[in-house]
Length: 275
Image (tube, rainbow, N blue to C red; front, side, top):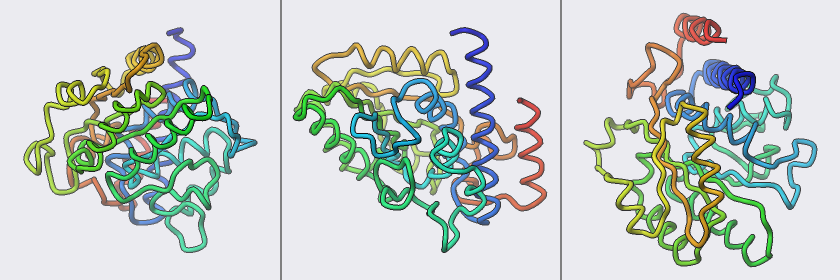
């Protein structure tokens, strides 16, 4: 990857992290940890990988993204604002009664949101349905789904995996955000769903494991996924919950807690120092 492009992607990811923090801080509620962990993934999807048009959010030929782990909506909103689907000024209205930026994605109210999500386990099924619809209609657009590691304890995730393999949905890509923590603690201690790689392979997936904060690895994995024919692809992205903010990194308490004024100021300063 060219250095200039890499630098721009890093800058965009940093801005997305700033917007995540701004929204959650302004709302005094939300889910910063898992939003920060997908900053690079969602940056690459919207600014390199996916074919979307902010001026025409409902364009029928667009690629789709389903944020199956819907509680990390602040990351999605930050990417959509940065891409131009709506003004960044809306970020500070996160979770407000009169705002279209709800605590979880709402496809009916928010430009650029492809599926309403929040009830864990359901989003990937929707993504697979979209992918099958594209196959039936002879369309070439692709569907991407970001799934939480804790979310993968849900049985419906594995039902969707069976569906995707059965219908040979090589136009769907599941991205597992593997930060190792969920609301109640370490994923391995709450209800260990590992090993993901061999389980997904047994379900009929092509599996790629990457560092989910490394843009070059993200780029290579998504490029590889597009070469796979006759089966779906799953990318296991190893990430750090709260990535980019020293006191949030790998701390389960930041799954669903908002920073106070002092913490917010420190977090912003740390991220800006990387830009």
